[in-house]
Length: 469
Ligand code: NAD
Image (cartoon, rainbow, N blue to C red):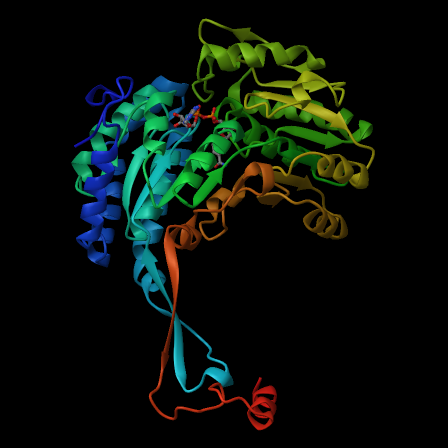
């Protein structure tokens, strides 16, 4: 059963989602989600849903964001299915008690960490990867043995509706529910005492989520964004760099949280790089990307207008054409971009790539460190000393050397931000851990019951303790 906004009477001060959350709480308390078989069955159901409903899901993603089929399959369907499969195959290993060494002072004893599910997890997704961001987190929460409420983004309405229709068909409705809706519904959900909240989206709402969670001492994982820098040094293979940057920037028409937001490079490298990016764009999307079926569209008019206004922030070196009727923004490269221009203020989140001058690696690092900690950072160079310096000097969520976004393909790399780009991570086993409590257990033997720690204290006991420490 899926709950929709119409079932609620939020504006009239109605019951909100207390009943829904109480039902899930009871289902969790009954132990239904504990057995690994239940978890594996849900994950398998999710995989089957993706597999059997591929056409419907691809259609919804196309309706919402004009996503090309192959791109949507690579970045959404296969991502979710892969995450569910990865978790299903490792469930037993992740869930079993993890032995840790017991120090001499606590001997004789055995000590272990016992992962246990938290209860009911709320997953609030964003619109740019509306399937992936609603379901990959849900898969991790299910793998850890939790009940889940999934709130897909209302800004991708076709995908939200598809999720709300399909999830009840493939997953256990007693423990996994979908709530569709916008701010009113999300706000009402946030009134409830969840056991964990995973939120993906902008930092402003991230703060609202964290404030609401604080009322119930609910832990949060916040997957936010930021301006992800891409540094290109003169020794890089610029042809490959251009292709990989163009791929990272123009996938999903730039509406990707880990897209390279802007390039930092020196004047001479910029002069060589720009025509190569132009060539990479043409080879991927042709001379007229508006006619390409490999290129997506902007999610709504508000974001289209926001992006169109950024095109004045520098010299249009590549692209620049737009069409409001179809929310098309051509893959665009801006040069002569001043650091204080509008395009350099906030995350761009669209297919506009400014190139900002930085004389060398030190200048680039200094620029990055002046801003908020980004979600991702990229360096293109063949110099391993530069690589080492970049890795140690730049704090960010995820880093990729000589490519963009490819950490997403490695399930066991913790995907998540730091500082303004978020907190926590939920890929692979990190996801299992994020939605588990890692309970500490020690089992002491009955004999011998050494008296060292018991009063009355004495110089002898104290001396022995110091030696044993
Ligand atoms: P969005 O508008 O879809 O909002 C995200 C969610 O928050 C939605 O489910 C929405 O219903 C809810 N929401 C919106 N306003 C709310 C309010 N006032 N109170 C409660 N809930 C509310 O997405 P967005 O914020 O436009 O997302 C874009 C941002 O997300 C970018 O900054 C991007 O970098 C970031 N992002 C991060 C990741 C990541 O994994 N780190 C992934 C995708 C997007």
